Image (cartoon, rainbow, N blue to C red; front, side):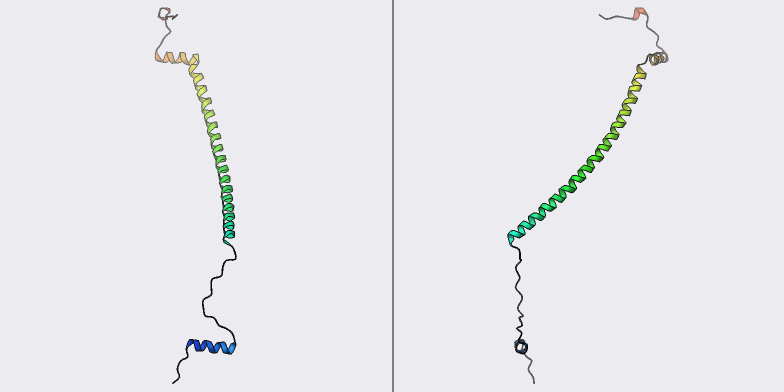
Length: 121
């Protein structure tokens, strides 16, 4: 009966025939080509780049929002100017002598007699 070969025997045979050294051990981790200082500097540059990008987008957004606010306030100003003009016109109408005479007639009032008028010093 033939006994099975051990792994070390198979490996030894393979190595002797091909003359190639086979390593089954795990590979060691290769070190990064960058030093910790270089990694820090690259990270810092990336953060600065991202920060400037975010700042640029934020400033454009704020500029757009301010533009919308200015437009809305201009429309509000126009509406208030029109309302002010209407109220001034109504005030002038209410102060007019023709309107006051008409209002007194509608209320049943009549002109005061000279005895009813008191002049204050």
